[in-house]
Length: 161
Length: 239
Image (cartoon, rainbow over all chains, first blue to last red; front, top):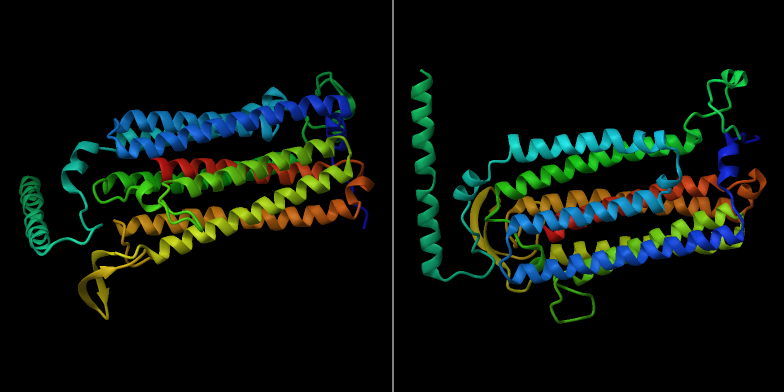
């Protein structure tokens, strides 16, 4: 069965000779070095920040912005979206970015209430084997914790009625 | 190749022209990649919610993933850095294969695609080792409440699986296995597709067609896999 390709003229448009190929390869290797540099920096920052106490919000901002930079390089350069026409670029970037922005809005504004959550979950000490005294103390604390939340729940229930 | 406006030329009503100047296959590969990207975004945001809900109990990745094969010293995040490097490298070899396809250089396409396949297998193997190590756990273990034979027991457990997690909240294990497993499945299927296209190139199917667009489409999928890994790596191991 013969295979008939659709719109092969666009693929022929992308074909180039050796000279142009050399220039493109040089650009691709340059992007590779950028990616490698950013990744090494992220890893170093990640393991360094884990030992010292860094401001969590600053860390999150740095890592996410570096990840978006890497994503830009991959989509624009490796996936050749930079070579496409403007409308094609917008078709890919527009809806996805809109959705991601909305997702972040959901995560941080409507669903993310950090202060209340930090109060509820105490640090987890079970990584290392605890001593007998520590185990008993942890069990006592766990029995205490549900008490405040149940009282607020019943108070709210009384208010509704 | 029509550079003037597509709507002016009467022959365009008969078809055969794309206003976006891109073929069906490539356009729909992009659409599929967007849908897959949305799926992964949903998974990662669910991970983000849970991680912040249990902020006190969540294990610190640099303390959990500090092992390197054949090395006894603790190297935090070194192995995952190696995995990221392998995947980025395979992405570079893939795009070089695409570039060689644009020059209709069959031999180069085959070499670069072969390297991409090797990189893909290396990544899947590394991920398997990481899973094995995560499941096996440390020698000292940790005290956890687990349900054995229907009874709640307080005992030392090693490693992580879907019922208990030595390192912290058991949700960490569930999310880790699910998301990295989903991604690993994408990598594996990408490797299989790459092998198929490699065989097609070797048999001269692309030469007969006159263009290597199939390599480009498959390259898009492979770069998407790399892109997702960049995000998974950031969310799981760094944040």
